[in-house]
Image (cartoon, rainbow, N blue to C red; front, side, top):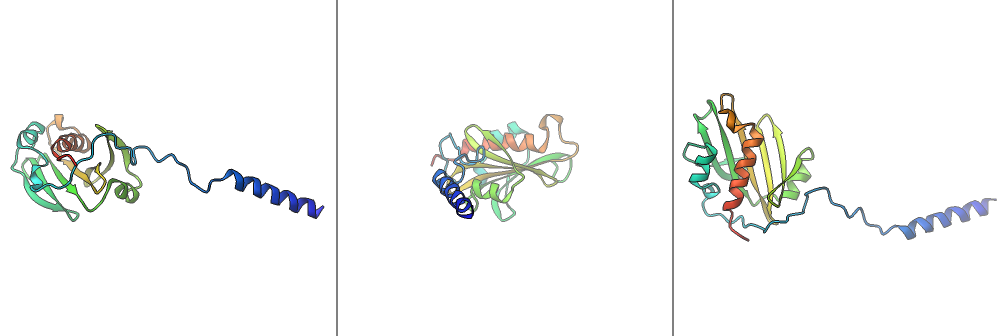
Length: 176
């Protein structure tokens, strides 16, 4: 009886080993690396060129853009209204330090969406709403927006604002 049980266990193990390829599921999480739009270059000489002046004004960003750094990322700060007062702001950067996949690996709670063929991760918290867009294999487009109390109703939420800014900035990145 023991020999029969041992033979069954060995046979079952061989059967299972024959069915396994040793690979994990081939289905990646949605939008993780499914860029369908043309890759962009993150080589941007003027970090405040990610939004053209007419785009910024159309979005309601009425203050002169200012080069700056947020969380170690060199980018450009755009403002509407008075700084710290009613209005909203957006920070835009061509991030060559972290790819989209690295971002979503670190931000497990991020929500995924698609912006014109570019996989995008969205994180909304008390600091505002951040969009990281997969525009290049060597980095990503980073946009953070914060809508403060008293901002015009048409601005919407911080995530509404971040989405519109990201869509505009994608257009200004050079082709790869």
